[in-house]
View 1 (cartoon, helix red, strand yellow):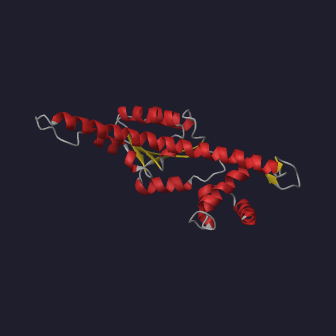
View 2 (cartoon, helix red, strand yellow):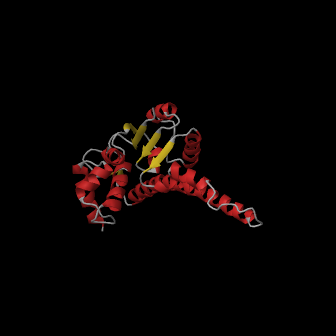
View 3 (cartoon, helix red, strand yellow):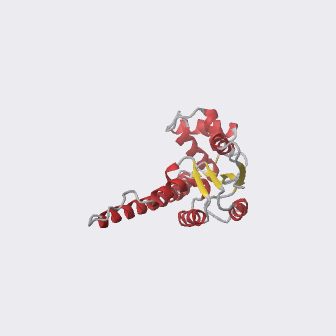
Amino acid sequence: MCTVYGYARISTKHQNIERQIRNISASYPNAVIITEAYTGTKIERPEWTKLYKKVKTGDTLVFDSVSRMSRNAEEGIKTYFELFDRGVELVFLKEAYINTATYADNLKDKIELTGTDEDEIFKGLNNYFRKLAERQIRIAFEQAEKEVTDLHQRTKEGLETARLNGKQIGAVKGKTLTTKKSIEAKEGIRKYSKDFDGTLADAEVITLTGISRNSYYKYKKELKAEQ
């Protein structure tokens, strides 16, 4: 009997995983949901490793996005094709164009051979379509890796800017601190809040980012003061 599994992952236990679970369940109500709080830059994650070994031909793995499977491009691509070769269907709700069903369809000849001299051209075009499908998969995983790399770089630059501006870095009682956590939280608020570069209301941003309500409004106030 084939099984549909939904895999939802957050990087830390302080983040909110409910949105991913809700999205997967909406599309696959009977999915067996596996959750994990572990960085996506490593493929050797405890719950993921168990699931990877468990799935069999005919099973389906559903992810809210490709970044939930892996944020290491090379490992993600390798795992994608290993699972594809095992006959496991992969579904990425936000990147349906790289679902294994779509990839399998792209492996088929798009242009039928005619038994004429033009067949060599048609073979070349069919091979091009297959290579293009593989390239789309690679780009999706590379983008997921780039996002986390960019976040780390912005956090590093933010900490350095804070240090140069004389702000306290680290834990000192009674002082306003600039920390890696606060910089990452503010980055998320800037990106998603309709008061900055996003389109979401406060409650939606809090749910999406996993920032506590008190911290959210504190960071939002500080961001507005910086404008």
